[in-house]
Length: 409
Image 1: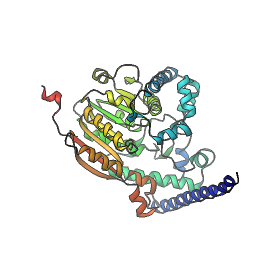
Image 2: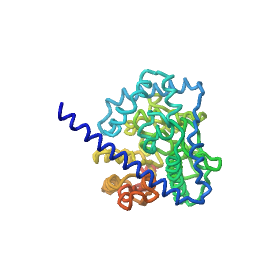
Image 3: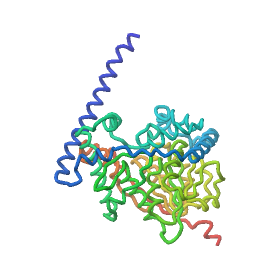
Image 4: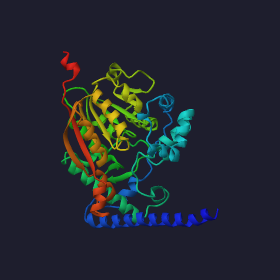
């Protein structure tokens, strides 16, 4: 007992030290942003206040939609226990489940539609989206509980403007700010600039969607699959802006449930296929606009039924063995290209796996991705070492072998 007592103040001191360091970095970033954007008409702190105003949807007519989501989730969790170890949740996601997802998983399992509706209609600000949204430190207290202090508004606005400028550069100024506007589902927060609401993460999601668009043939119907699509941010822009595109997402059951809510609400006229509603055949995929499946269903995707497969960060936490199995399923099911965004270690592993003699893919392009580093220290706070440690890579792999289907024709 005495030993425990002695350890407690040490832990408290370390926590206080870490908290002070984070606050100091926030203050530095806010001050840097104020200098960087001085004279920029977009640098108006009111843009943050307006961007964090509540946009909650009070509609009650989604009971049928929520029941459908619960049914698919229950079937997915029941089947998951029989899935190969490769498709089990990573330790990081298991931690997220234990710490934050208890209420939402209970609501899904017990079909508590009222509790689920309350969480989902506020998911950008509710713990049910833990692990899927990158939010500033101390956001609940600093941004949602009271009037936002100027230092917090300056920090968030600087962060948002750096990302918007980076988005414009990475997309060669092909788009206007209005292209980042989107569905206000789940009570999102962000910044309101010149009448356009830019929710958190919209810039990166839009960028990824149009990277996908650059890889598909606009003259014919195209099928795009994503591994680890989160709540559906990238899918929203892809489905909104690209004609004749169908979309599949493979993720953990909790994320699939949330993305089902987001995309079903955003695109009520599209035809959706959820887990357990129909077997995942090529005919079923062709008939649907959106297919949302637990990750273990990746193993059942028909051969060469996907044009482009995309994964951002989701494969970075996998073991090398699991990464090999994922890649084999991607290679089997993808007839066009595979775009992977991940950290240095994961990128090297994917490249090594793809270089095997029996791999149908070759690495066509590698780009250094600054999205992660801009998110953390785009203003230069943290120094060169901090930027280097957070560098991500985009790798585009192209299929080189002639498909069996084509050779048989």
